[in-house]
Length: 359
Image 1 (tube, rainbow, N blue to C red):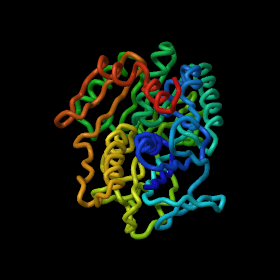
Image 2: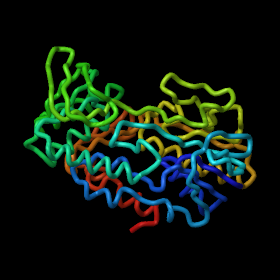
Image 3: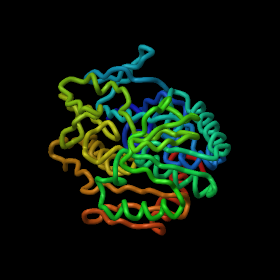
């Protein structure tokens, strides 16, 4: 079986890594290196981490290959690239992911440029006395914690239109985060829309006025949310495109009338949210399914994908503090110890470096 995977982010590279010993894998990725964005938040206060979290693809696969290129369309048995070439495949997986404001994800096809953007942001944060983070999703909350853990004397404000942090999760998560952020002396402005922002795509020095009239000035860091990346999946026949750009999938993560095309990661509207943790359930399932198909099984005779009942979320506030929801029952809310042990201490850096063939 020949498998082509479009996109070398968390979902794409992990699936390629899992399949590499078993089938003929081609990973198509526009960038020369993977950027471990989960750790990019801490790299803003510890730029030395950049040497560990920008990882070339050249040692990811032992049997398969990584092609640097941008996929532009998909036929029944071929992925077409922007340079006019194509990759023939029996099964094709689209994992084109999402975009985010700088510096948290690459803005173009050069991972080294993102590393430089992270260094520039690190210098801005180190020099700023007042920092305003607009957006209190996972990126905004974690960034507030990382800055205060490194620079406890800096003034950090966290602004959110929502009155409650992570309202889709148990209320105890909000309570635990509120307690910890308050102890770190993060100024919380919840239920407040920020207006007058000069830009929302990158950090900048400026000011904003909140809905209640409060004026905040300083280094403004937008963390407003992920946006689905443009993808050849959006041109597939008979897709169900959601308002946010995600694509509906069937029980086997197929998004269109082409039976040999799958969608995973942020692109797939599985109801699990756009998080790295969601991919940790999707990629093992799809790898196992494709291996059985390579052995002659019909896909619809195999178990369908079962999304997380409660998708976990891990929210470190620096290396030692934080709160998380684990996928136990309706969601088990835990605090500093488990959050640090699972994610906060090393941000999965050793795991991903090992998967990419680095020590």
